[in-house]
Length: 224
Image 1 (tube, rainbow, N blue to C red):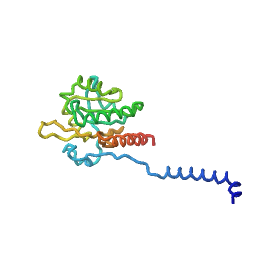
Image 2: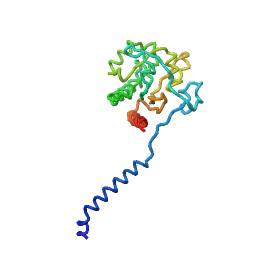
Image 3: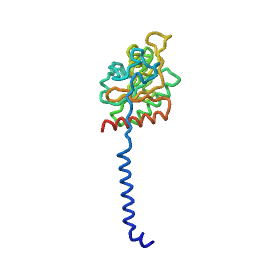
Image 4: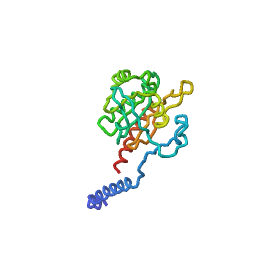
């Protein structure tokens, strides 16, 4: 028996290696490819969605916008054309969840700094306080790279409508006025067609890891 194995050792080893390769190839071919969902207003918590679109089930996209970033530059949807980006809502004087969210946005900036296809966008929900000068100070403190990450302020009505009619990301504050809003911890993943492809808890490190994995999945989908 030993002599048999010695005689055919090379053949058996080669056959084993080839079998492993074939099995791996078949597994990679047959395993399902993960596809990220495209979120519509009807699928999202109604508290985060404007009443005019709560029942919309298709054709949802991020609306055009024109806002001002931390450097005083006008930022429109053109800056994000053909890009994947992560958006959130915050304010610079927030002492609760915002510092955690901003820290995680900075982690995303660091993880994607060499990838020009991935950008970040943070909207102030209190633009009357978050002036350009205030955003500039905050950006400097938080080590924001302006080529990757815009902190934006502007017309409050526009930001409110973007939050509730486009990004589906903030709650309405009924006691504060027509455009007052309560931001959430949500990060939104936006694809190259300006569609929402994911929601993530911006205060949870594990959710940030999931977001990074979903960015890879989304990027790969454009290669297929």
